Amino acid sequence: DTGVSQNPRHKITKRGQNVTFRCDPISEHNRLYWYRQTLGQGPEFLTYFQNEAQLEKSRLLSDRFSAERPKGSFSTLEIQRTEQGDSAMYLCASSFERIGEQYFGPGTRLTVT
Amino acid sequence: TQLLEQSPQFLSIQEGENLTVYCNSSSVFSSLQWYRQEPGEGPVLLVTVVTGGEVKKLKRLTFQFGDARKDSSLHITAAQPGDTGLYLCAGLTLLFSGGYNKLIFGAGTRLAVHP
Image 1 (tube, each protein chain N blue to C red):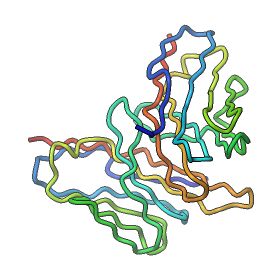
Image 2 (cartoon, one colour; image 1 turned 30 degrees about the vertical axis):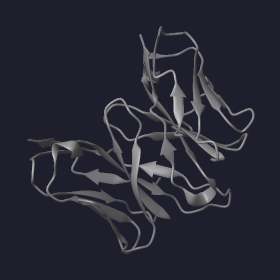
Image 3 (tube, rainbow over the protein chains, first blue to last red; image 1 turned 90 degrees about the vertical axis):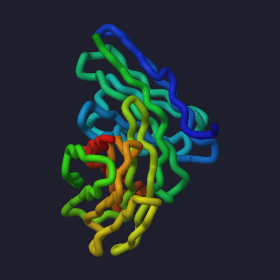
Image 4 (cartoon, each protein chain N blue to C red; image 1 turned 90 degrees about the horizontal axis):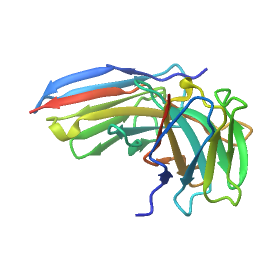
């Protein structure tokens, strides 16, 4: 299977802890996106990479959030000092150039207790 | 701010019935994508419509993009329990000088098809 993969699938953490999620995009896709989805809502854009360059960040991405894509392949999303409001499904998607069709991974469900 | 409004939010129907889901905006989009999402999983791309007035069919699903590229509809004929899920529309914004098209999602329509 060469789809988008995300790890872990589920993460339960205590408030104040740091968490890191990983996304492996479809191999030939140079664009990678992170979204957050809360219950009853559609995904909300967080940030976007073209190759290794982070080109846009949403205002939703507070200074506790950081994302990297060091070699233009996999990406990591780190949340520092987690808060209960960070509980959500974190989705990664990838696409090829400007075709625009984004393919999503299965997501990482974060629960902050 | 570009918004996509989907209606209805919830739909509960019997197997064999037809249904239509609507996706509306005041903004023009470069293209519009429809996804289906199962609980605990990521959205799965169903179709992309690009041209105003375009109609695409995927078995019992018919997708239409409005002439002005501001709205879209999804029609399901003879719904089956396997069609149950969250249907999301997502509009790709027009290209800005930064060279990035953003995908804006609606809140989704949760469909339940009962046997």
